[in-house]
Length: 152
Picture 1 (cartoon, rainbow, N blue to C red):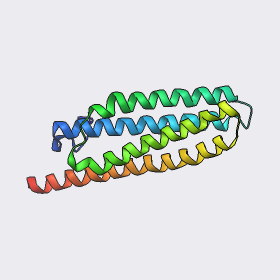
Picture 2: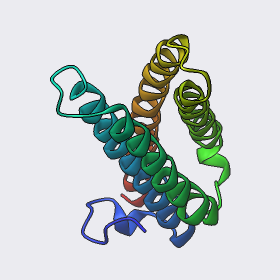
Picture 3: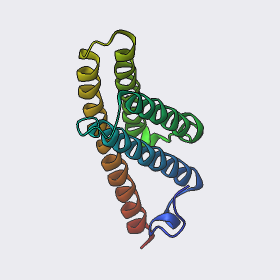
Picture 4: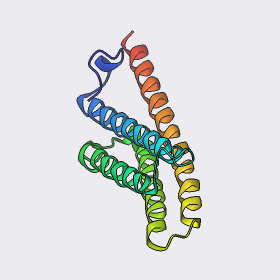
């Protein structure tokens, strides 16, 4: 649910509030988990993190992101106005899943190419996540401005 104190909250329907709240919540979770993985991976170069720490961070991030996506985000109906954003959020989820799969494949065969490929995919996922946040914000602002203009 969108924060009831948000300046646009009164301009949104209950369904719009639910979708925006779920979408922003999921994207926030994704950002936090991506940052967490990056910190653990960066610690490998200084000895602060082990390969085991990295593997656990990836598995944890996946489980938290899955909970946010399947538990919260998918329970909110993507209304027509948000259909493009919904498609992009689905792409964001798929990219994250691909990155996690690729990273975790390293522990099956110790091929460093999995780490490189996982990193490339995760970087793309991060870009798409940022685009989702931007697009959702712009759509929400446009919708609110349109409704404020109609109300005058």
